[in-house]
Amino acid sequence: MANQTQLDRTFAACAHPIRRGIIERLGTREMTVGEATGDFAVSKPSISKHLRVLEEAGAIVRVIDGRTHRLRLAEHGLADAQEWMSDQHAIWERKFDVLEDYLLARQRARGRAGDSTPAGGDAR
Amino acid sequence: MANQTQLDRTFAACAHPIRRGIIERLGTREMTVGEATGDFAVSKPSISKHLRVLEEAGAIVRVIDGRTHRLRLAEHGLADAQEWMSDQHAIWERKFDVLEDYLLARQRARGRAGDSTPAGGDAR
Image 1 (cartoon, rainbow over the protein chains, first blue to last red):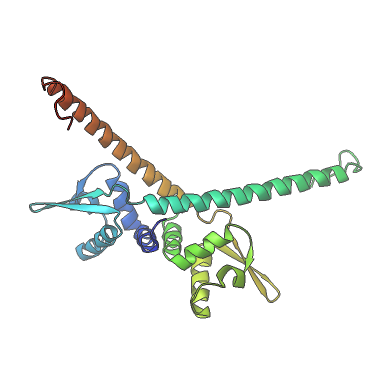
Image 2 (cartoon, chains in turn orange, brown):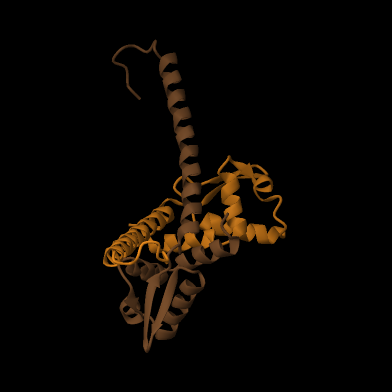
């Protein structure tokens, strides 16, 4: 089972558009900090804070190569959070499928009960 | 495309074990506030705060029936966040598949290059 603190951190890391943007960019390839964060219109300290949140959540990895810092996605960075989300979503979907089936059955039953309605009646 | 603020709220809502616990419970059925939150060892104001976060994120819906408050999952409550997570995860997986293919190809190429190794040699 996924560690709760780990899930807390991953979801919190995903709860900001800049951090999601960095994850999306790094999906294509490893990048320098400049490449991955260059066009966000926020201060450098703010970018550093976002990167720290992503690193502490285990979502990204920083490789320090002399004076160049490269960022890449961590191999199983989102795996547990993604699994939890998918599980909940599946349960959710199933729930509404059951509800839909029930409502359709109810509608059909009503349709049959209303078979005596004159033809051409309002189809409401 | 999913609204960024909405995604922020959904991910933040999922970033706490009590809130995830409430979502998990409501996956089974509609519940009173007491049923959904009864055995979390935290204060009532704290529970109220967690419920507010879930409601504001559109993850759960509160139905007020006289003096009874019932909670249920919102129909598309996690859908956008789940989709974003799955997209990233798929990109992530593909990335590592490509890497794996590359490493396997490299290993095979090295194996061929080492074909002159005496038979029965160490299979490292």
